[in-house]
Amino acid sequence: MRTLIIHASEFSYNIKQRVKIPIVEDVDEGQTYEFRNCLVIFVSVEKDDITRLREIKGRFDEDIAVVMGQVNAESAVIYPYAHLSSNLSDPRNAIRVLKRLEDELKARGVSVHRSPFGWYKEFKLHCLGHPLSELSRSF
View 1 (cartoon, rainbow, N blue to C red):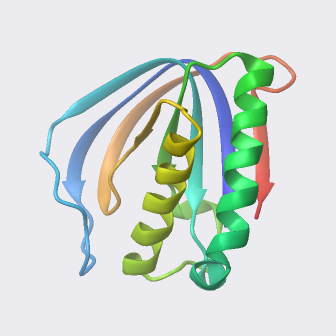
View 2 (cartoon, helix red, strand yellow; view 1 turned 90 degrees about the vertical axis):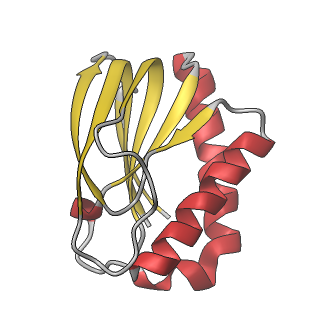
View 3 (cartoon, rainbow, N blue to C red; view 1 turned 90 degrees about the horizontal axis):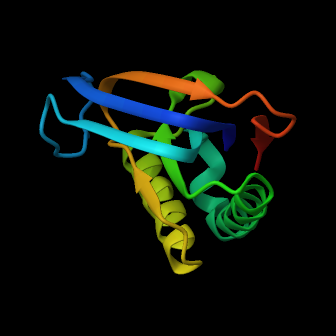
């Protein structure tokens, strides 16, 4: 799994159009979501991640909790983002992994939102521009 983590003063996205893949999550097209002082976590789920889920989710939620504390972010946004890897998982397993990541953060008491898988989304992002505002991780 690969991630790009941005500490944003503002982040918003609008659900535009369904991707032409067999499995997508049910959502309302046109819905807009807005967040302030958040960690935006762009996530590419890779082929072997489902078999390594226990290891990945433990490292992921610990790392995100540490970064949130370091930058004083109020919430996290998990945003599926296929553009970080060329070795992508199938959609069904990607959704399973993303849901587990969300559940793990919630169990830690993190205010977390997961954007839907399988949709084209328009987004606006204002990165804060400090030393920890842009990070990448491979799990």
